[in-house]
Length: 162
Ligand SMILES: Nc1nc2c(c(=O)[nH]1)N[C@H]1C(S)=C(S)[C@@H](COP(=O)(O)O)O[C@H]1N2
Ligand SMILES: [Mo]
Image 1 (cartoon, rainbow, N blue to C red):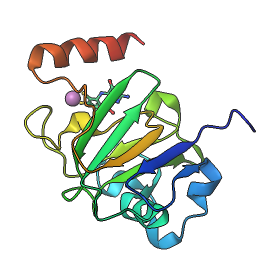
Image 2 (spheres, rainbow, N blue to C red):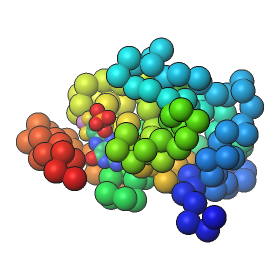
Image 3 (cartoon, rainbow, N blue to C red):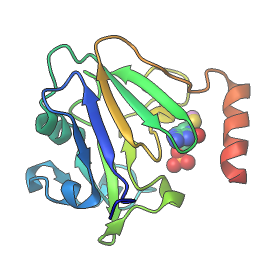
């Protein structure tokens, strides 16, 4: 039990949380998305809406940026909250089981209406895999997404070697 993965949510919130798979499953059906392929035919599984998570932790008005931290491979993004707060979600379950690490699990952030890689702040690169910490901040936070084609190509080469 003690090694069970958790998704930590903290920063500009009323109550920090560390959520397990079963905590996510227990979130009201109103905030669940069953079958994310309706948003992207290449994706499968179920998700919880970011808006549901924000409600759970009580996001403060001072929360302007969302920091997405993937500790496993040290990948981080910080994006403005407003454009994604009603559309983004966290994929966490496939066929009733936790999302596999091969698919970016156990928790994977997903923005359905993302821009192409490094063309905008809200790009495909911000779909952070193995996200274990969501941090709400008042200013832009740490971000090490690739910002040009060369860096981007290098990152993908690394991803495919692993
Ligand atoms: N943790 C983590 N998340 C990541 C990345 C990464 O290297 N590490 N790459 C990003 C980039 S640059 C892109 S374009 C998408 C690719 O997602 P896909 O492999 O599911 O198509 O994941 C993003 N999320
Ligand atoms: Mo990307």
